[in-house]
Length: 511
Ligand SMILES: Cc1cc2nc3c(=O)[nH]c(=O)nc-3n(C[C@H](O)[C@H](O)[C@H](O)COP(=O)(O)OP(=O)(O)OC[C@H]3O[C@@H](n4cnc5c(N)ncnc54)[C@H](O)[C@@H]3O)c2cc1C
Image (cartoon, helix red, strand yellow):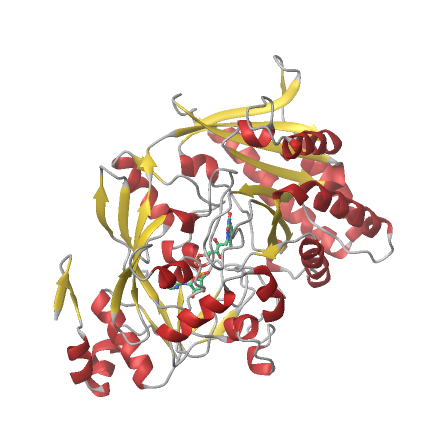
């Protein structure tokens, strides 16, 4: 047995000696009573043969060894936030909710080593107490670090890569239950595959994450007419000369756009590092009002519009007027809101109630063309009898390119464009045609789908999009020759398997 950071691990010699009975005994107490897994949106559900929640790295090894000996499959899940069957299986499942410790903080390099199961919302306050912060994050911090990395979860900022680009090294339990620590020097191919590995290369048990000294962000939200916003965006995209002032994307560290197609308006949010103090939170009364309209009224309005789609446009107008439109700023004569906060306070937002979402990334220079085509398409659907209804807003975020093999922003500075269809009170709403057409639109413009979302990209298309797809599959084959980490989603998209067993409807819930 070997010891690392106090954790007792199994060596290859230990693994050889251990019997299946011993493995069964050792992992019995780690089995959850319920064997059901449902994703956050409630849209996918599976019944696993067993769900294990290990407490130590040694126990992870035992679960993997048991899986191998019993010729089972094993799928990891984090928080189950992927709105697809990405984590679903009817084999074994493994979850690291009991492995959420921060193991090391290097104050010189600002590299923080954490266990793979740590949720980002648990990590943030620990970083803050140590004067550190993550440089970028997505709309929420509920994800586990391993889950966020496995799908290249992104935030926004054209000089900021997705979260995987901040990983300096990681430790995996491989399919043969051995433990390896990898980085750009040690087994670089496995590292480049695992940085967006879709759970296929092993169980991520440790991650060394590059952080930066704690900072505050000044958030400024400005309201625009749609055409004004497009003008601004196009000027920014044409702006090849990085020294030019007044460029939305170049002059601001983080930019996101929420476009409200029903009212032809957009909110443009810029977020920049500042030394200013945090703005006091809104009063309790203001928070209650915002919740009453922004959550409850919105949910009710969408519910009614599910049965009377013609009302959706009116609901959008009411929501715009009472929940989203900003107060006029006397100085600039433009509706503006500003505040200062910590990175999670500013980067994260309330994603309201369960929803279907689809998101993909297009080359940044194609952003305006895609939005123009989307606007035209929405207009056509709005006037067609029985046309597709679409909720709001459309979210547009910008991400720096990287060199991670399966990252959607591989060698492509991109604009992520996301659409959503809320499920008010859990009621189903139509979304399939809308998302399929939107996905085709993105692909026509050189786009790639977000791995976490339910998408239709098949292997030949993936081949065209990802020049390292074969390298990824070769590395995967090397570390998992018996395919213990595969599941229907990965078989369907990466192995070109077809049939009922891998059908995207297999784990789909009727919601
Ligand atoms: C409300 C909401 C907001 C979101 N906002 C954003 C956003 O702003 N930006 C963005 O890019 N995405 C966003 N997402 C998507 C989300 O970030 C990804 O789906 C992420 O992968 C979820 O992390 P998780 O811990 O829930 O992982 P899961 O969904 O449980 O799993 C995702 C993948 O990680 C693998 N995995 C999990 N743990 C391990 C492990 N220990 N070892 C190996 N593999 C593992 C699983 O096998 C699976 O392949 C959002 C999702 C929701 C529901």
